[in-house]
Image 1 (cartoon, rainbow, N blue to C red):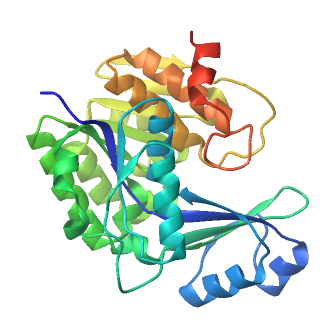
Image 2 (tube, rainbow, N blue to C red):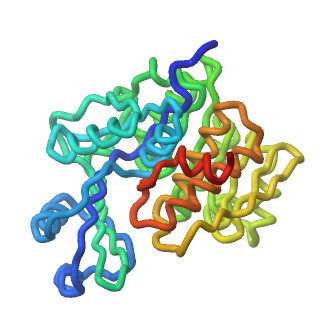
Length: 329
């Protein structure tokens, strides 16, 4: 069956607002430098009003992955909830501009569009204040099930598992994808998220997931393992493919009894690790949906991750297609 999309993703629709800030601003708002804090709508509005002009781009883990797939030349779609406000308009315009389809209707009431204020101090430290807003209100009614049915692969973002409505949307979408011959991939997103939902994540992996993406902390948290090797043994066979990233150690891809170790690409000084896992998934999934073998999938994932860590922000600033031509031929 011919599919319209290679990858369709469901995740938090967040606008990243990257601004220069000084230590006094952090002190005034009692922010701990270098950390991520969840803030409410009033705090988000107050902070947004206080900072100077910034770089505003669509963000969120799955959205970053889908943008990467689109930049590589894949046919990508994204489902996520924004509000009909200024930042909602920025999100929609931005993700469409990289070639991903985004048609989830904007909410006309309720919380405003999610945003992550990223305060960069002169010492290059990044302090993040995240307001999840409209994004966590995603529910089954927001799903474009026709888009899901037309995807070779459905990609789910673990961060949304905190919301019961979003959880129901995930399961509904996974069942539609499977019923139409598609595969399902899950990113565990965050070790703390895994700690909160360990049992239900294990059930999701066992029952609905073909490809699992996790870093070393996330996979060890999922199985309460004492080591990466123990966690890898635990996950082996529970899904078709487990792609496990290990920072400077590269990644390990498990498929049945087979194991593939992928070396990292070191393309320059390490500047910012934000988005490394998102772009690894983008490269991997693009290669996978083009029918390439798992080693090739891992290499493309590693290359995309290797590029994004050499710059500020989670979206590649150069051409990924040119990067592939240069390093993978």
